[in-house]
Amino acid sequence: MLGLAAALAALAFDQAHKFWMLNIFDVAARPPMSLAPFLDIVLSWNYGVSYSLFPAHETITRLALLTMQGAIIAGLAIWMVRTQSRATAVALGLIIGGALGNAADRITRGAVADFFYLHTSLPVGPLANYVFNLADVFITAGVALLVIEGFFLPQERRAKT
Image 1 (spheres, helix red, strand yellow):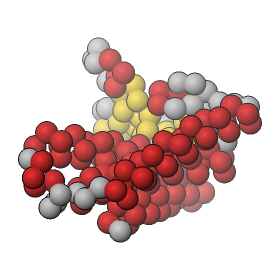
Image 2: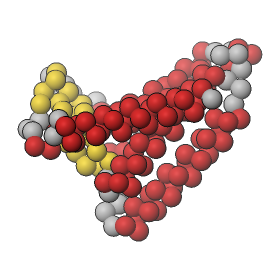
Image 3: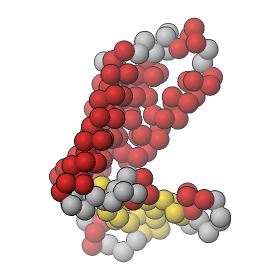
């Protein structure tokens, strides 16, 4: 139940934020806005996966991407239902909720709406330029929680968390 609550909360926050940014704040009609020297608010449509890899502009490629995304979400959901660890359940719920949020965009808008542009002039690899949304934040937080749990919680305590 905890994982399901995390998934539903992540999905709801992501979709509410996207609705607000697109329909009320009207980010499409605004120029990029600087929040910090390394972070701007922009509108970027992502037709692919991370870093716009494997762009899916046609219906058939979008369906293929959604099918693959659905299979991954189903696998994570099975893992979430079977886990005895509350931390794992929450982590997987965050990942599932974020993935569902991006899938909902792909279904309803044809692409994923991204708003936060993280940038630097430093040669730091792929994070030198990265555009993301709240769904991506939830996915990253879920993965980070899984890593933290895996490295820092002894096996005996994982079932109790």
